[in-house]
Amino acid sequence: MSLRINTNTMLIFIDKKAPEKAKSILSETARVVEFQTHGMVYEVVSGHPDIFMCQTPDGIVAAPGLPKEYKEILKEHNVNFFFGKENPGVQYPQTARYNALFTKHGILHNLKLTDSGILALDKKQIHCSQGYTRCNTIEVKDIIFTSDLGVIKTLQNKSINSFYIEPGEILLKGFKNGFFGGCCGIMNSKFFVCGSFGYLKNGQVIRELIQQQGFEVIELYNGPLYDVGGIFFLT
Image (cartoon, rainbow, N blue to C red; front, side, top):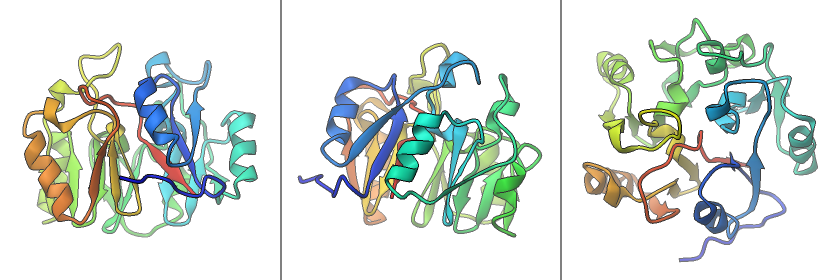
C-alpha cells in the first residue's frame, strides 16, 4: 500500500494530541500540521480542526481568530480559505459554530448555531438538533455515517441513506466517549480512520459498507477509534 502524495500540494490538519502512530502514518502521505489553540475553547477540543474550520466545496471557512501560524501555513500552500464572522465560544453551543458538514444534499447542521459565513455559501440547508454535526458525521459517497441518533432521524425523515454507529467505544479524553466523524477523514478514494474497526461494534460491517462505496480503508493505528476532531486533508 502506497500513501505517498505530493507533499507540496497537500496538508493534513489533525489534533496535536492525536496518537503518534497515526500522525506518523499520515506523514507518509503529506505534511502533517499538528493543530492546537490556547484559551479559545475548552481544552478537550482545543486542537480539533472541526471546531475552527469547516470544509466546503468552495474552500475552508475558518474562524477569524485562527492562530496566525496556521493562517500562514494555509497561505504558503495556496489553500483556498476565507474567514467566517465569529470565533468559536469558550463553551458549547458556541464551540459548534464551524462544526457543520457539507453533503451533496446540502449543509447539515444545527442552523441556529452555524456561522453566517458558512450559511452564505449554499442555499440548501438541513437542520438537525446536533451542534457537533461534523464531529459525529461523515459522508462517504452515497452513505452518511453518524454517531448521533438525532442526525439519523433527520436524515431518515428526508429519505437520505444513512448508517448509525454507536459511539460508546470511541475514545475522547475527558469525556465518556467521542464521536465517529471526529475519527475520520477522506482523501480521494481513501478513507482514513484514527484507530481500527476491529475495536468497534459492527466494525466489520462499517468497513465493508465503506469499501462498497469504492473507498480503501486505512486504519492509522491498532487500537480503539480516537476522536481527533476530524482529519482534514487540504489542497
